[in-house]
Image 1 (tube, rainbow, N blue to C red):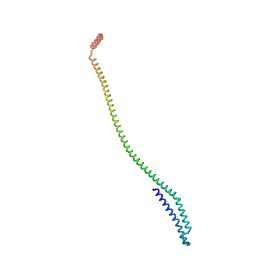
Image 2: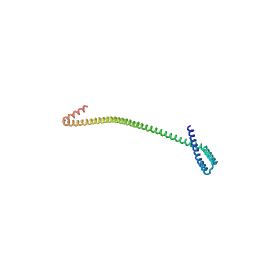
Image 3: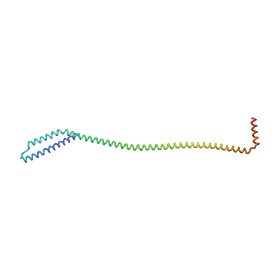
Image 4: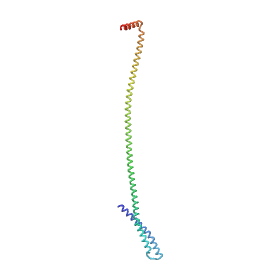
Length: 201
């Protein structure tokens, strides 16, 4: 329906154009007729003028019928091209708007993802901190136990060395006292007792 109204509008415009050309071409003929009447005194319409007007009308009509369809097709093609360009531009505009919406959604998702990643890193950091503290506690307990064992060992070694040193000093002191108190008669008596035990056995 719209296409038919567009075609009729074109036809009317073309017809007005042809009539305008006809009037423009006929105006000089009428002017020359008026000049002829004033100069030569001839009366009425001259046959050659009629023939010229008829020739022009036939030429204009022929041009109209010959050029009507090509001009209509050319104008229709031009209109179709413009409509196609408009549709293409509209489609591009819609695609650009869709891309803009998609990019905005991606940006929003990226913000959400960044928040999630930061939260995940924070959670992992807290877990790593707790794990390190737990490992440090275990290591501290092990070091404490090892230190206790080392201290116990050192204490035992020191006690044994102290006991050995005390015994050695006690023996040395007892030997020196025995030497001071024992007499030659005591020594002879001890020797005799020892020999008696050896012989009895």
